[in-house]
Structures are given as structure tokens and as C-alpha cells.
Length: 374
Image (cartoon, rainbow, N blue to C red; front, side, top):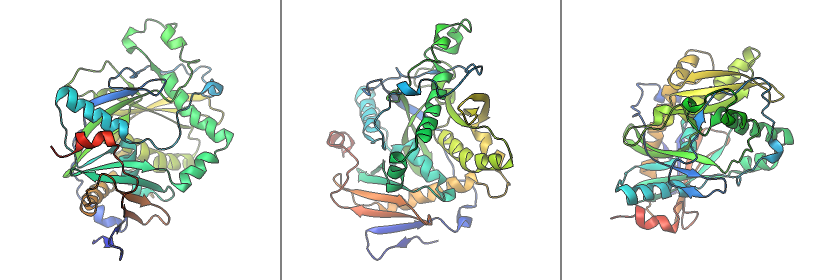
């Protein structure tokens, strides 16, 4: 199916439907390989190392309420994360190890996740900015009116529920490998309940992979490790774990909503960077953590396969591959001072790409020399 070009030659549209054009043999997706990492400390200072990595240790489910400590939450600045720290990490990799990794598209895992889930998205608008520079497309997220209004209009209960996810991570992680814990009274374990949650702190992995002929680099926050991280060049990704919370599934409708809307995002986030499993914490409406379940990432598509009104991982991957191939054709103006806007909004039928001359460049000035032509 030919994608349409608007009468204005700088506006392009990629239709989502018909789905059947993506229902074919699955495109090849290579196992992601970590190439570097970085950390943000409690003051949001950037460090090119893994100092903020954490280790998984199951929480004590007795008297485990996710609201504890909410009044002490330290929240980082809200809104989309610029791509700058990811690019700084790639520059640092090149300067310290001489590793210059080429890619067709560079972005955050969260952006790739939204794109991968787009065929089944019916109610969440998104907008990205993209700059083409030295044959690489750099993409970062813009805050849409929908997300801004949602953020500013969040109720106190909605904000508290947002905290529950952060608290779950705090209750599931420790600062040393699990093998170093000697008893249930170990200070590392006892400290978790009253740990002040500070969302400035992040550990991020940077990986390379490819989808079809599209070479990708993505940065992703990683919740924790199951074991000690091996030294490079061994790939540590299979030791990473994703942590998620959701409400207890009480009936068939709850199960349907979980499988239809939650599992697709769980799968996409972990699959894209090669994380092998997800630990899901089930909580009640008051934030009490009730149970844990381990889900293997590669088994998720089989959990929904053949069910009515569900999603298909093959369609998602083929869609993303064809969209990237199309995007690389339409984003053809190489200008570090300009950008393209990539948007998906009501009625959620097509992705629109628009060129913006001398507006909203994605790269900072400090990146131009390092990512420019040699």
C-alpha cells in the first residue's frame, strides 16, 4: 500500500490500516547488545558508569503498603526526557574506547515502545521531534496537549497511584547482590520500607540492535539486576529485570484489560532491549502489595495469541519495520538546526510527519562535532 503525501510537500502520512499488510512472516529482530551505560544520581548529576544500578530481592509481602513515604517523595522535573544524556553517553563511549557505533535511528526505549504499540493504540496521542544529521535520525519526545492536561489535572489519588510504582521498585531492590544478604534482618532489607523515593536516581543501559535493515540504538532505564553485572564485552542484558505493578485481577474483565492494554506495553518495553523477564506486583485499591508473579518476556505474545480483540506481536514488529523504512525515506533534509514533527492523534488512523525549518532541533550544540561527518 502506498503511503500518502499531502499536497504540502513537507507533510507525509503513514496509514495504520489495513492491518493485513503487516500480517506476514515476522521481520528479523536481532538480540540487543549493551554498548555502554550511565547513571543519574540523587541530584540529577550525570555519571558515565553503573553506580546507580540495583539488585532484585523479593519484597516482604507482610504489611507491605505502597503508600508509605509518599509525603517524602523527591520528584524529578516532569515532562519528556531530552535525548542529550543518551548522546553524551555515546560520545563518551567513542572518546574513551574508540567505539563509534553507527545507527539509522537513535532514541529512548520509551519512544520505540510507543511506536511498536501504535497499531493497537486507540486513545493515546503522542508527538516526537526528529533531526537528521550525518545519516542518522535522532528522535525525542514532545509533550502533547493531552499529556500536559493529564499531568496538570491529575487528582491526588492519581498522583499517589503513580508513586506506587516507584515504591514497588524501592521495595524490590537492594544495593548489593542478593548473594550477600545473610538473613531477613539484614540492614539492606530492613531499610527498604522507609527508603525515601527519589526519582532523580536512574540507571540507564544503552544498547544496539536492528529491526530488518534498520540499525537502532536506544537508551533505557533499567530497574534492577538479578545477578552481578559481567564485565564488557559480555552482554549483561539477560541479567536485567523489569518491575511492574498492577491492580489485582478479580474477574474476566480485569483479565481482558490486563492482557489487552497492559501486557502489550510490558512485552514491548522488555522485548526491545532484550530483558528476559518481568516481575509484576499485584496490589489492591488501597496500595497494599498482595502477590508477585514472574512473567517471561518471550512468552507474553503466546499468552494472548488467538484470543478475541487481542494484539499480535508479529503485526507490531512488521508495522514498526515498515514505518522505519518509510520514515528514513521521508526524513531527507539534513539540517542540525531544524526538525521534523512525528505525530499520532485522533482519530488514530495515521502517523503524520511534518518538516519544521529552523525549529526545535533535537541535538545540542555540543553534539554536532561528535556526530558530524568525519
